[in-house]
Length: 342
Ligand code: NAD
Ligand code: ZN
Ligand code: ZN
Image 1 (cartoon, helix red, strand yellow):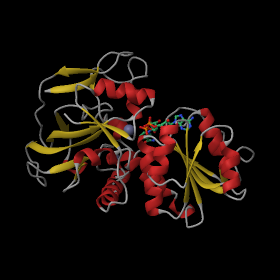
Image 2 (tube, helix red, strand yellow; image 1 turned 180 degrees about the horizontal axis):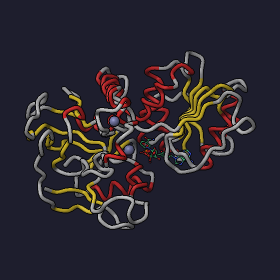
Image 3 (tube, protein in one colour; image 1 turned 60 degrees about the vertical axis):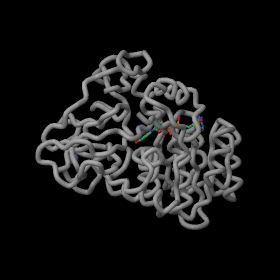
């Protein structure tokens, strides 16, 4: 089969021919119908030698049609259209029992890695999923439109749900970065919270997209942003700030624009650090760095899409075009999410 692999540190991903994998006991093989590209893939490809075992098939947003079942598999039938819950855990610990496999206590110790982030990923013709519990039925949702909900939808949803108590009618939420995650985050905030949504980005195109998907205001992410947010909130600041970038300048905007008793959710893995303490963050403010989301939250997010409350802006690519899609992601010129259709 053909697959998009990251093969050599410092090189671009390559389209290669590799053996089609066979499902082992308990595993399911999918014929991939869609796979999304995430900015975290760029981060993975920026890491030094040894961070990941190479070559590695990329893609941690996957959807497919059930194609072959390993021995002992029940609960799905060939031909079924499914999305992959990618934050694989052990399935047994307390976090996993709650469906929060993203916070599995034993994944590291057991060497369990998500597809595309250690295990072979979805940017290929076929994908092995380790367990039926990591599949969520798509029903009649279009896989190309839905695949990115498994990360670019689920991750903001997980962050927003944990801050929902801070976001009643009349409150303000700030979304920093209106890219893959951010443009869906804006829609989720509009759908499930009462907040006025202020989006920030450095690109005029992304600010336009932010307005189109429901942001009440879309502002340049620069020195003027904090004063504008303070002015729009009567001096109070935002009850929640969702930072989908996480660099030094965005964390400073988050720190300076959050309200007292508000919450900053650092979702972007830009790697900067936010000093938190009595004299650096507003009184009572909480800072959190959430990771991905739970299985049941993925089902919620697919439900929001099914009801028409949220949708993913996609740019479609073939497997051969995937390296070009990664270039566009790196340049910041994609609208919404890049989705590869093998
Ligand atoms: P993306 O490239 O699609 O979007 C990033 C957006 O941020 C772009 O619109 C870009 O113009 C904008 N931006 C860049 N610099 C900015 C600045 N200084 N101020 C405001 N906006 C700025 O990326 P994505 O795939 O949506 O991922 C967003 C981030 O979230 C990445 O860091 C990614 O690695 C991370 N991520 C984290 C998790 C998690 O579980 N915590 C999950 C998925 C992705
Ligand atoms: Zn991701
Ligand atoms: Zn676990």
